[in-house]
Length: 403
Image 1: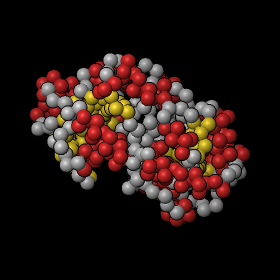
Image 2: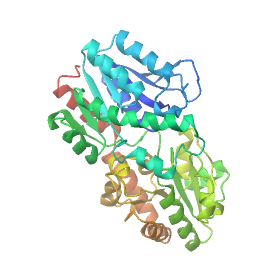
Image 3: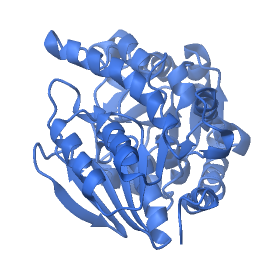
């Protein structure tokens, strides 16, 4: 079969990794897969490439007043509409709901009358991501006047799209129990639903020698090094306050942060600025080395609807790297860490998280065991090959995917 997959955001951001791995799994079964995503660099041109068996098309990221990663680029939407209406495809797999996914999917169902599978992997409206963005003023620091109005208008429209797209899908896959229940509440029959987590990139991330990684990165081999990787920082308050407390207790320790800057002045407010080693966004091929340089990896999760509904991509990377993890008991992902004995899982508050970080730092003798268990979980429960097998079997059982 010829399959068109739509990812709404920039390449190597957020949902892209899930979409690519699903495409990779379908392609390994003999299907011809084309994945549409947004270019991180191209303003008005397309670029074509191939990664293994998957053809990747990066579309223009030009957007009018709305954040590029949100999928509102008019050139992007128009090109996808043309591909959906005119391309010779047998099946569409749509990830999330923004306009560059919603409208091509809607036109596909209306005019092509071919199968549509929707993957729901984040809780946006009704108290989800949009509410968190507002609380931490994400995208608001530089957006003023008409730009701020455009961003708010876009989010209001997306609340409708988020729920509408799953209603006209032939099958719906979800990333969490919360979204599974929400889809059922919207009228999606359980027989048309499949829940599965995002997997671990076992062939891209593996346990590496810590001192060799630090040598490559020019990092002091001595101090305890905590690691944190993020696409953006919805939980920056609980993270920075807890880390500030932990670093005052663990003398000489530092935290390497791979990702965008925190809200201006926040690290200073929590007294943690001097303990952070902020290296900015890095290409994914560098991530294994940064993870390998760390002793313990941190995954902050405040207790809110957004975190209960999502599956942080970084958990797969963390587990695959074979390092101990400290996280909070929110959503589905921490269950794997706690059940598998791959680190410390605490209540979702600053004091408990800080205590967990300190306790992990003080138990160096357990780091190797925690790390081995982390890698074992990645290989045993979060292998993309087994996850993709489940996906294919589900679609074949519904007669949406043919060998």
